Image 1 (spheres, one colour):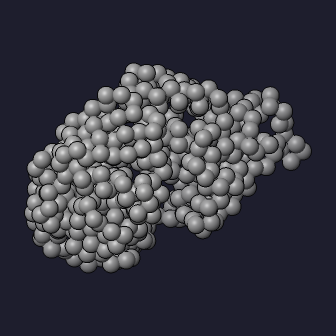
Image 2 (tube, one colour; image 1 turned 90 degrees about the vertical axis):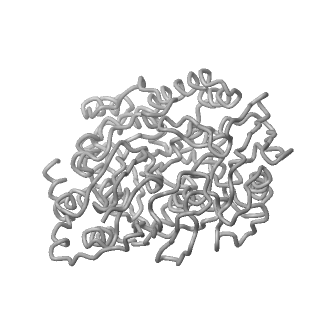
Length: 509
């Protein structure tokens, strides 16, 4: 198995592309970062793709921010109170201005939320604020949020990445020239080409060292690598295959920084399927997948094993759940007990895996296909263009499918969103239609209190149940990997893989 993986990987290695490329250099005042696609919408009320949210976090400010353990810390809100389960009172800073000079007040925060909730801008983010009854702004520095029912996810939904305050009166075309209060101000955007930001003059935060940021859209991974190698770009984060990163380590003008990340790669099951509804079958599949080998061979050890949806740094993570170490003998025994013995052709049954046409996803599917064949499971792999793939997955039209959580698994509300019966499509991401009354009860208990200890107890049991029943296999967390020019220095990576490191980075010639 290992030799076959190495052979496959050798075919996709791109080291030879790098020879003989002419060096180019960026402006001494501009850092160029490579991104895979254009942000869909830089209005923070609307954009939900990774590029939109990560660039928005440099332009706009949220009420609260996440720390390294995903606790919520003051930001625009210097403090907040929760006098009863249905009321949050936020007290705002009084020294914040938008980049056009207007003061940022509670009226702007209220307007931002109201336009989402009331549908004045069309946004899928409205679902996150359905528990809000009304919002009051009694004075410039006080915001009161009244809820219809307790919502422990509210603070997460006004935190960095997913939320940014816009000036009151911002209309539907605000995305064309967004104005925030963050450390960088919007300059321009050209679809499928770039987004340009400049250092903001009026930010209340420490002023960045970098004067200008250019996010250059380069969809092809090989081209991104060449741009870095030539010196015409300064950085790419989590945007290059592991083999490419390995090849770039030989480049004298480049440096690679990495650390534990939170992006989760997982396989989800349709638990309504006649075969996969048996938890013994799902557990057997988990035991049949050699995750350490895949991490070593496909990702060059740039990942770590996952046993929970939450990353290990999270305050609600439970490290005591059942582990699913590679054990094909145990997998075969489970399948035998479930009544699926090998037939004359050596297989027990066929199941289908849908993937996108992304090369990494297809390669992963090929490896899993071979490993499951060793325990008598025939995995039929079908690849689709991403739009078709995503539409089918969102509707639960699949048996097995690979997917990723990018940022979404940093909030404990991920359990409700992914595993509650109230989150069956189209109301959430429980796309495998997993149903467990005890899990529903525990999630209701966690949602009914703001007490951290009570929530932790509930989430611990939820993770224990999910590890036993295996509605999805948590495979690994991908490392955060930043490939950058040596002139870009003083970098502090976030496990989330966001662009916050650009706030403190410096350019040195």
